[in-house]
Length: 353
Image (tube, rainbow, N blue to C red; front, side, top):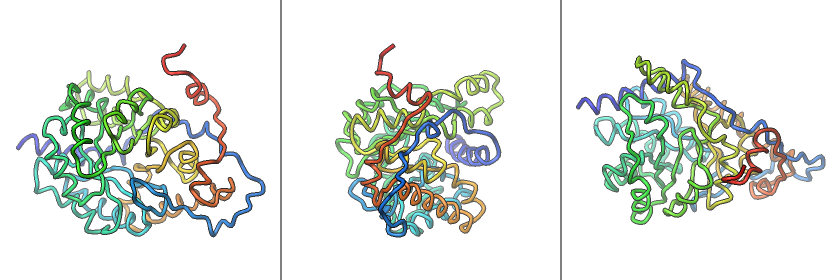
């Protein structure tokens, strides 16, 4: 019972800290990306098609509501509003880790509300790779059934685990667990990092395990090391969290590496606008995920959340117009300029000097 209570209360801690404290760190790299401007775009902005296809599902936009919360009664209304947004705008959505509800079914309501409010939306369940290893495919099946999801995200959060007072420090056997779930599971498996990015080498192992997609979760957005610093009074853990809050691969660098190595990629980690989503698509992403920018508006109310999402979608549309991209496929072919440190990292061969 104590473990169940700890998992659930931790979810509420995370929401409070993300809203009240400075938890963003690092540089995502999007400021180093410039889309080639088309001075003669030859397209009608009002007729631009932002539709895209992800894992055999048609979506109205590459904007993806990235995993945020669930697992505590006080998070139910947040997920309700996020789900209504996903349904309203025809976009995909991921839920937060379902571990708390898998440990205590009484907490399922904070997740099941998502499918109740978004009967047609593309929803992704969410389970940690350590829980997958320890509990097997049964937990993955329960997570998917809980929200009638079309896919499951298996999240990798070992930096967070290293800093958490109650963290899991043993990663042995996780790759084999991924192989097994990818081989045997009935719906697509997305492997998701949570703020440190995925390298080309890790991406190749993930594709080799059979993943249907990768969510890179790169450096530049919410730092879970920073979040965990605010949850502990332990001097050593606080020091560790501060030391490693900038650890990881910048999102743009991770995106370039993962997109070159395999299949469909979701870019998350520091995307803060529709133009960032446009840049991500031009660099090879299928979807661009955002979480923190939607959290406070979702707490405030539906109108505030809808306004932020509509602003983001308009920014995407204008970026497409100014690059002469009448469709997402044309945006994928838009030329990009890489500058600064991002250019240096992207042009440095893996393992090179």
